[in-house]
Amino acid sequence: MTCERSYTRKVSASRAAASVALVLALAACSPTDETLAEPELGAVVVTQWVEGTELFLEYPFLVMGQQTGNWAIHLTDREDFQPIRAGTLTVRFMSAGTAAETFTVDAPLRDGIFLLDPAIGRAGSYDVELTLVSDQVSSQHVVSGVLVHATEEEALAYAAAEELAGISFLKEQQWTIPFAVEPAATHSVQQTMLAPGEVVPPDGALVRVSAPVDGIAAADANRGAPSVGDAVRQGQVLAVLAPTGQDGGFAQSRGRVERLRREVERDAVLLDAGAIPAKRLEEARHDLEIAEAELLAMGGGTDGAYHLNLRAPMSGVIAERTFVPGGRVEAGESLFTIVDPAKAWIRVQVPAAAANSLPAGAGSLFTVDNSPDAFSARLRSVGSTIDPQTRTVSVVFEVAAGQRRFVFGQFVQATVPTGEVVEGIAIPNTAILDENGTPVVYVQAGGETFERRILTVGPTDGRRTIVVAGLQPGDMVVSVGPYQVRLASLSGGDFAGGHAH
Image (cartoon, rainbow, N blue to C red; front, side, top):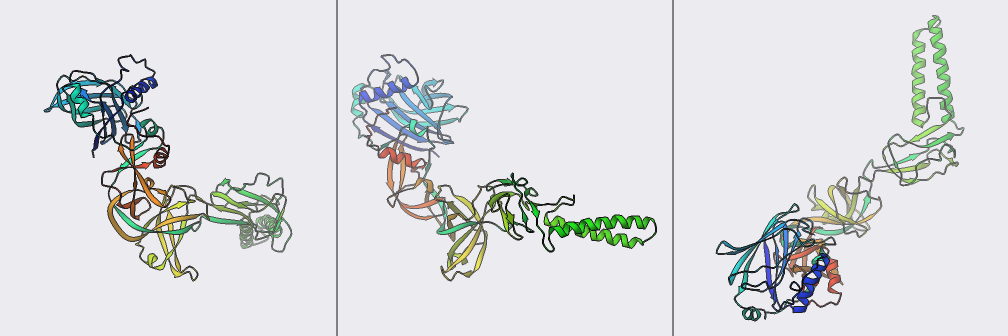
């Protein structure tokens, strides 16, 4: 898509000369007096977007056979909105499909800015082709209706057009911050409603590790126990307990294993001597296997050590730890809580009518702690009972894996689809600023000129919002960096039309 806007404005001679002087100074050049001669003519400003690049061009009115001043050709890569830093620019003045004059600029004078001071031998109207070949991106812009005047008097008379006013935000400012523009265009937007929600652990993503027996968490053995926030792997030892005496406890299980081992050894000797049947040895070994399994289930080892190890039942992160090394623990007491923060569910409370209209597999977006970043989730289940206090239904969305690590218990703002789709002019939600309750966007009217627009907005799907009034298709709205443009509008500086770098 090519979106071109051209306008003419008066530029003072001193301002235009200062612009060129500062560009050259920033490029560490030593301009000649001829280069800095004050131009007496007006200037034309062109802004154009094509596939790959944005062109912002300022050029003085041309007079046949004269070099009237530098063309400041600004080129921006639309992939990342960074300046073109290297490449060759070929400029052709086309008349009736034939190149009347051709100029080549081997490299930008400085990042993003190519300078050219052409002299054209014949008056008339030209289409100017600007062809960029660069490792960053290659593109071509065509600027139509470039006038070459026969005399200076004719050019000065043409320069009497109205000056364009607006918010000045220079390319050098745009290139140093996250910045992007996007055309307002027709999109299909699913109607949604905002609803509060909570990040909750999925089934199996949260486990509690409890003490299987009464015991002492010996200080020396637990000095390296994992703490809150530490990552643990499945099977890792979390704590070491020295059990205390109790009926049916660790000590009795440990003793039973040792007794059964001695019994198996004795029966093996007796079997060899023919004193007992083989069945008796088989039964003793079976009893030993059961006793060892019970001991292992408690966390104890079969190596004879009088302690048991509490191991992580899954990999994850320690969310809670309640025991203190050297302290006493009781059987059933929760010592650790382990969560897998890579997985999460969002439980949202929505009105029953909205819950019943949710299509299977419906998607939702949500934000956490007023963050501008939106995360996606997919409908998992819809509750079948209404909360008697809030008169809402619990709806669970499953968060797409790998988006971020979530903290269970966080509150979120979710956009829940209502099932209806609306088509209209839509823009990214990142482009819309809330200025005292009024939705506002900033539109790029020229390369360094912006306009503030008040909007009437319609439905949003959490990423894009329908614009009912305030924009036209093709308007280039600032989708990344609108707040910085707003700050520029509040700086109090008047936009005089010059390109003051």
